Amino acid sequence: MADVLERVFEKGDCVYVVDYWGTNDGTQAFEAQAIILNVNLENKTFSAVLYGDTYQKYSFKDFGRIIFDTYEEACEAANKLPVPKSTVFQVIGNRVYKKTVKGIDGCYTDGVFDLVVCFNKGKDVSTREIGISLFMNESDARRK
Image (cartoon, rainbow, N blue to C red; front, side):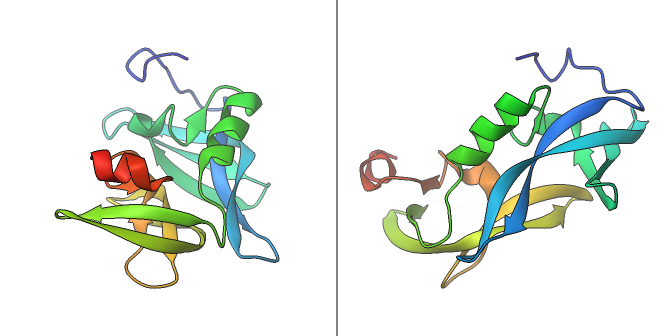
C-alpha cells in the first residue's frame, strides 16, 4: 500500500472507499467504487462520486483507512469494522465500557467524510478511534 505522501490523486481516477449501507439489522460498512471529480491540493482533499449519484469529499490522510487503490483492500477494511448488534469496548478515562453497535454511519468532520460507529446508547465515535479508544475485544481495551 502506498504511503499517503506518495499517493497522487487525480481527476478521473478510480479509487475504492469504505461506505455504509442499510441492512435488515442496521447500517453496515461496505466497499464502493468512487470516481474522483476534482482534487484540491491545497486542502489535501478530493471530491468523488459513488453509485453514480452520491457525492462525498475525502481527505488524503484517510488513504489506507477508508480510501484504497483496490477493491480487495476496501473489502478487507470494511469487513474489519463492527457490524450491527455486535459488541465493542470503549475506553473512556480509566474505565472500559461494553457497547452494542447499532450501525455504521457517515458524517462530515472538518469538512470531509468520515465513518462513525453508532451505539444503542452514547455518542457516535469515529472509526479513526478503533485501536485507540474503541476495541473489538475486552482484553485489548483493558491493555490500553
